[in-house]
Length: 211
Length: 238
Image (tube, rainbow over the protein chains, first blue to last red):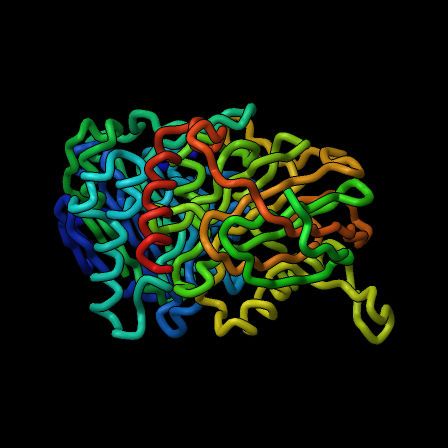
């Protein structure tokens, strides 16, 4: 559901541009509002969330889908954890639909999806590993689960087809969510050069936080 | 295909075993309306696990059916779906937890119900995972065999009742040595308000060697590359 926010980035407590291919992570405190801004349009922001005090309790795509009985994320969606907790609630969305079944690329899955010789390419799950290591040596591959792809459009048909479509995002569109507990947010700003959905051109996003 | 082992899994039962590459697992819905929750891990490197997104996007599918494959998160295949009779199995709706089961079915304690007490799928997974040194960190989206959930254009999901009939079956052929973790708790969207988990029969057999014209290989070029990655792993590992 499209809904604009009344928050002004000029009043934000934190702003950081995340370049294409970079990983970014930050703790979002309970009650803070977190916006991801698609600066140039049709960029996928691959995102994971963890309970900041117990990272074993983390975003769960299947629990989120189960609890809302729907595939796509938008205003009103509660982002659920494996432990059954609501981590964040999406409170504004000027894009309208975000994917959570498409996952993130990896060097290994790129060999399967595109070609064996794509293995050396930069990939999201490597970025996730680096981002987790910046929080704790104890976090790693085992903690990377099925993420959210903000701004990504992966339509499913009633007959069971699945495709990757051109994004429905555009420059300046954003998604905004309120943290319902202290969470670690982890973004891999997808460097995928093999996917036509962003015209083979990864672009930056901006992370903005308000108290 | 010669059968080397068979057993019955009761409703709301749980099961975990390593199945060697080259073997098959046939699951049969004995009464109709069964749901088999499944998680898969590399038997030796257990941080390699079933990956729902790679399985779906690698094959451009939303529903699991023959001759598609079950992909790991390392560009490899755990198993191929060599045969199945219902044409649609869910892998996005996840597993019930204690809260969901109590909200839907009410209190179902062991003290009153003895072994008919209400189990939930997440707890069953965690009990079995613990026996292999795994835990909450290893919970990922699972497969729900025999259950059909469709999406409308807006992404709203609906459970299709009466989808799996008595005698319906699924046969998997394992391509990696795989830790298979199962439970037979009801699908989280099963609309029945009575807790009536259904039993399944399990049969493990020896598969024929994969030929160049195997339907799982031919269905997508992505699968050919995943088979290649799997065979490189097996060649170097064993």
